[in-house]
Length: 149
Image (cartoon, rainbow, N blue to C red; front, side, top):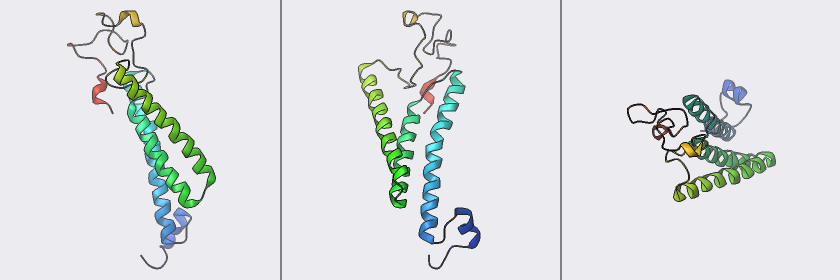
């Protein structure tokens, strides 16, 4: 595109050139991906009626951090670069720990961290399902996390 962006767009995004418009739109998309992780975590916790962190939270964290890191580099913003670099290390480490746990069999098959029964001695008992919230109905887990990201 040649020329300058329309005034309404330039004012809304606080930019003056087309490259700056595209960079601002990329930054907004990156922030939307990063925010989606919180929505996923909130919905998963509401569904389970207790706080859990699904694996999708960590994947969205990593994707959002990578996008925001690119945005920070393109803007030459050291604050964004440092914050997202450190965050990416944390997200990668959590994903690695989940992978190791799954291979060792110590993580629930649906991958929801914090979803183990409250009392490990009751695992498999008729009055305690995988979420630690009473018996499953119809042989199925009441909060079937296998359908959740």
